[in-house]
Image (cartoon, rainbow, N blue to C red; front, side, top):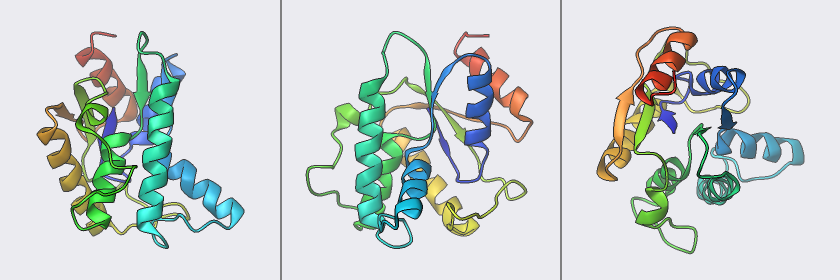
Amino acid sequence: MLSGCSGGGKSTVLEDLASRGFATVDEPGRRIVRDELATGGLALPWVDATGFAHRCIDTARADLAHHERDQWVFFDRGLVDADTALRHYEGGHCTGSSACSIEELQSYHKRVFFTPPWPELYANDEERQLNFTDAVDEYSRLLDAYERLGYSITVLPKVGVTERSDLILAELDLL
């Protein structure tokens, strides 16, 4: 799992891992925003944040179910990120059938890699309208959530993509 600050380089690392032959899964939120913008949908974080978070949970569940557990798959965000967003948008309380169980939230490999806030990399675009301060707040919530769930977190250094990928693969004994 790659998580952490929006705009911290997760997608770039994922692209590098894919180029090395590893299975990867793109961030649910980006895919949803792209789809909603293309179709005129409203499940966008700046229009209907709760609806967006529910869609992220559904997408992350489908992503997890789709991939074999006997091979390495690198995810750009997942259920913990979506559940944390939903809890934030709902004021800390998850309700309804899309709320994630502890078992679901602990479905990923115990080692999680975090991209820290990196203002020099951060950029808004049509799909990312979150400002940097909000992205840093999101990072803190995610770090707390992953720690509470018992994940071992490695914060990636602010170095080039090759070095970040090498560090991930080395920590997982895949290099």
